[in-house]
Length: 507
Ligand code: KIV
Ligand code: ZN
Image (cartoon, rainbow, N blue to C red; front, top):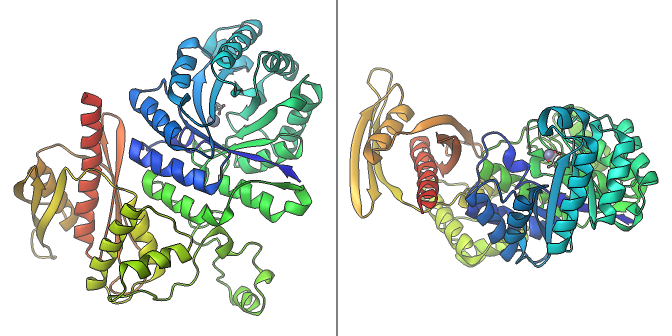
């Protein structure tokens, strides 16, 4: 069976998703999760982009032991030096350098000829190879480039030392058959290609990213670049879970396999969604809430008789817990809680378990029936940690259709209690204004969503708040049986992340 390498770019191309801005802690949580998931390569970021990016890549490189850690660099010495500096301490470092090759990019973006680009690519691959033995070269906008030129370029770049060549459909323009033939032509004509990995990197502008990537590997490519939940520039990249599950489900037809531990897929999707604040559409393949829901009577009847009538993948196989029965309650101890997480495939470090257990205990005081969905929400919410610069101590709110919504908050800051009240158009608005007055920092609210976690009168409300500061978006999350409390805490969580970034940038 052919082993396909999974190159995950959630932390690089995925982080280019509009409205996504992960901090170092969040990137590390995702990187560790990707390592546990079994991805071959983690593209950790673009170190030249900012000091924050550089530090995140360096910190991921030092932490990750079982996946290659790649850093992106334009084909310039400055970028390559910076990328190498960031990944050099990794167990298995990779420099990923790129330059555009299509006539459109050459004319309008680079103002260079094909020969000039070829010379630069060769020089920079040679330079990168002098620093790091694992160098990947990407021809940006390859699919809209002249195939004869690409064959010449890739042949030279392989001679210069590239260990992987990547053939992106940067603008998501390809169709599956066409992209497959494009890859095959390169496979058949580039000298030395049999000794290296060939990678596909497809964007989803026409909804073809996964199909095109599969067509690429069916025509000889050995690595797929993808992102959890299909995050990425514009319409996104090929989704990791769809690629992996297509290969897994149609293994015998494709005669291929990946190294992904598929039972970690559901959790990875939830984690990335929680940290990025990008919601997964309910009908999304593999990881959508409805991906395994059978609505019509005929389907339900069929599934009850024999699951395979309407199910090609079991939810359990990707780590989705189906049994939503109540298993833990008020009297459950930490040990039972931690065992229960393990039984359901959740691996977390001691601190995270302790924190989740505290939240679970608090919840048992307020909620009679704790379901798996509640526990899943607590675990994911736990990932949204930030230094508690500001902490909600108490709030009081007054609402109703005949009164002016008014909220008073008490917030702890540096050992002091900040107390303020405000009216607003609604109770949530009054609460947000009270917080803004108490902390005395202007807040630019970009988005607010509330979702009920499980059914019933005492269901938990999960609030996501996005605020903006200097073109950066900060995502705050909180859970509570009381939606005003969840709203205030989500806002404070976002503010705390914003403060962390401002302080870091000022250092
Ligand atoms: O889409 C693209 O071409 C890229 C390259 C930098 C690999 O993201
Ligand atoms: Zn891309």
